[in-house]
Length: 281
Image (cartoon, rainbow, N blue to C red; front, side):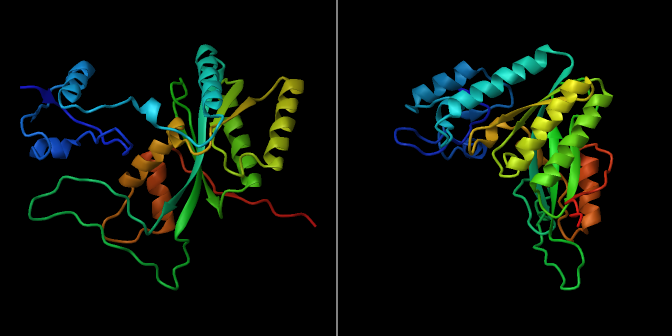
């Protein structure tokens, strides 16, 4: 009897079936003659088993697509810059994205609990006199595969992400990288309007010119990801796991409590919130 440890659910498409999930396999509701094993099996074993049951499949990289017509070119640029970052000791590869940390919405997740005491997430409401916002915006830079002790850098925002706040966050990240001896930041981020605005492009040009002329600071190589391709930015998965770990099941967190839990989860020191610069009249 062949064994499969787990399966993955793939999107429906003509000619392709659903690969059963772990729970379906365990219950025997899909293939009753396939047993579930806790031992790892090879990819070839899984492939042969799927063929035996006439299930056609493709690797994720072949069916996960983006509507961006320049997807392959932009992905190739990202991969090339990441490889350059790995080769040069004074370079750092950083994945930047923003997210909203909600005090109300509860993430979907599973947990172990006694059979007669299931964990239930209670829907929360905000009192009319509650001074805290319902959600907090946050910038994050994820720097993987690096000797830098802190791989995740966070700054919460007073308000929402905008171009002028984005440049503040980038400037702060460059300061942190310069302190650990980095000279170049390969910046990989999505196509949010506050990433590709005229103000941000002008700031990047001015910043890089200043670094080149002074010989001090961190130069930024910007790489915009293809449209609607979050799987190319690993920080997106960090956000998902973080939101599952800071949730409170039966009470409403204050903004300060939520912010503190996020910093603790990502092992980041608390920082002051970024805010929109005031106009000088």
